[in-house]
Structures are given as C-alpha cells and as structure tokens.
Image 1 (cartoon, rainbow, N blue to C red):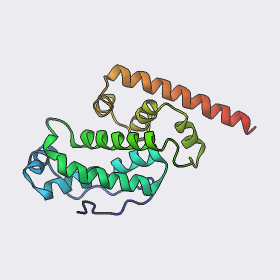
Image 2: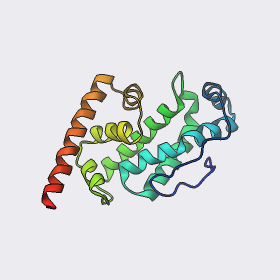
Image 3: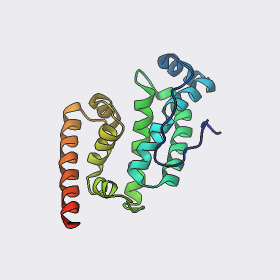
Image 4: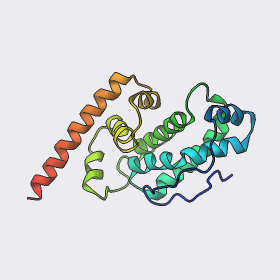
Amino acid sequence: MNFFSSSMRGPSRPHAPRLFSYDESKLVRAAPRGDLHAFNQLVVRHQERAYRVAYHLLNDTDTASGITQNVIAHAYAKIATLHDESFEVWLLRLITARCTAYLESYPAPFAPRTELQRGIETLALSERITLILADLEKLAPQDIAAITHTDVATVRARLSRARRGLRDVLQGASLQNV
C-alpha cells in the first residue's frame, strides 16, 4: 500500500503551496471510517515534515524514508485511535517514538555530516527531539508537549538546555578550528 504521492529524497525541499484546501477535522473523522482518500490527503499534507523530523533524528535519508513509510502504514491501521487531536501531532508522535526505538537499538548508526548535526547528536535524545521540533520544524511548545507526552514547562526547559548545549558544542568546535 503506497500512501505517498511524491518521492521523499533528501533532508528537505521547498514545496509549492497545496492546490487543494480541506478541513482537517473533517478528514480526521472520515479516515477512521475507511476513507482512504481522506487519509491520503492528511498524509500528503504532513509527510514531508514527518520525514524531515525522522531525517534530523537519524541523519540518514534511506532510514528516515523507510521509517516514515512504515509509520504511515502503521498510522493507517491505527487511525481509529486518533481522537480530538491534530493528525500532524499524532503522526509526529508516532515518528519520534519509532525513531527513538531505532536509536535505542542502534545508538549511533550514521555519522553526522555537518557541525550542526554533530552538535545536535551530542544532546540527550529528549533534548534533541525538542530542539528539532522547535527550531527546525517551528512547532509550538504546546504541540511539542503533546508529541513528547510532557508538559509545556518541560518542553521549555529541555529546549533551553538543548540550545545551551548546542551553543557550547558549536563554540568549542569553532575554537578548535582557529
């Protein structure tokens, strides 16, 4: 079953505005009733962000793509469990959980390619997830709290620690290069 309407290659790509408009809550209500078209519209809207989050956590395009596809297939099977929340938040919760499980099984599977990636990888996983969702994906603290099953105060604390830790690592790396 292929839910993707476009290929997911590379860490991110700018994309044109969607030509269709929809009411997400209407689609979320229709998808659990077996409406594959509704589910596909939800996926089209959120698959790129889900992939980017997986990519930033894993630092590997193929693994991120595979996990994203696997999670979307799983999401279709579990769509009936989605109640009164954003599809995007629910999908990103599934993505971060699957990536976390992967990273726990394979702690450092792929070498970071940039100083920023190396710096992010030095952070605790909970801080890394929070930083990626906040600073790279520009999600609101309330959404991050819902994705990570924490409260907003915890999100803000993790984000502060992550930014401080990343700053320290990047400053240390730049001092070593001088």
